[in-house]
Image (cartoon, rainbow over the protein chains, first blue to last red):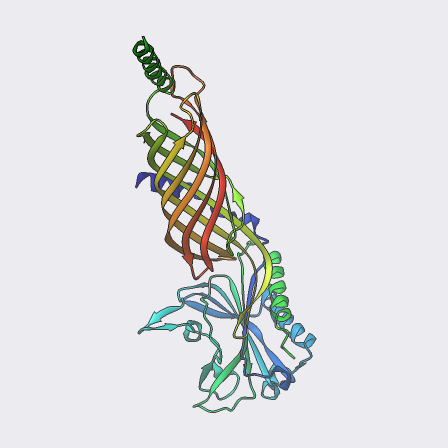
Length: 206
Length: 202
């Protein structure tokens, strides 16, 4: 046992400095959605920031840069921007969430995996923000858990049927994750590059 | 007269054998040192590194044939540059990542030495178990899987004992090893290793 412990102590883990330092970018979509059928979109004007058990909506320059980049990428894809106050005229609604820290993780609750833990997070975006939907719906599996300092982008289908008994489908989402360097400029640039990558690898958009 | 010659030859043979055996000292052996290991023909880590060590010991139950035990460890890491992966079901992932494979084989060994002089070339075979831990690191995420497998390893090398009245010496050997470790999570189905080791021999 002593020899085993000594061997384990000598284990050489990969060095983080060898990594490229760029963000991990995960995207998922509804395979039942035809993204060419949508023509307009709008995007929230603030970023929901989750920090532990607290959440708030941020409109600072950092958040605004992220929102602007999402809008730019959508326009580059050929979608037409609709002002947020006219969101009822948009086919797609995009919302951004930045998770600084979280007490919630993907977990097994009552024998099943609660993969969509963030939907129940205090202060999380309400489907009522976009219309009269009664809840959220992901028409595809989300099998990852979110870590600290990650950016989440949800794209909701605002053309779906509304009603208290209807759920608002999230037809595309992106998860952008990376170590925070602590320097606002570099962190923002890495997240902006992550946003660009999210749209680049989603060729099916438009 | 003939009997006299036979007795003389027999006596000389016995004396020679004892003398040769005395040159290498005791019949037991202990070897330990540094191990350079490469993994290949798998889908997880294909890289070589010197993050390893070994120790083995045994006893020559016959002048040429020894049995003993061994243990070693090695880490092999591989950096995979950024790429985009189609995960199926409409999901895509872009990231760089690092794979790490840590192995601790141990078990029994059989050794045949061709001579038992100061320079002792030998061939050997090891048989035992291999405990392996596999890791994947992506951004702030880490995944781990571990398991056991059977381990078999042929080896060829030599020990050299340069001092007349001491068993102290050096060892250099090359080996191949295969273990049956599997990991569904990381698509590992058997681990091929090859490498060499350099150490001290007592």
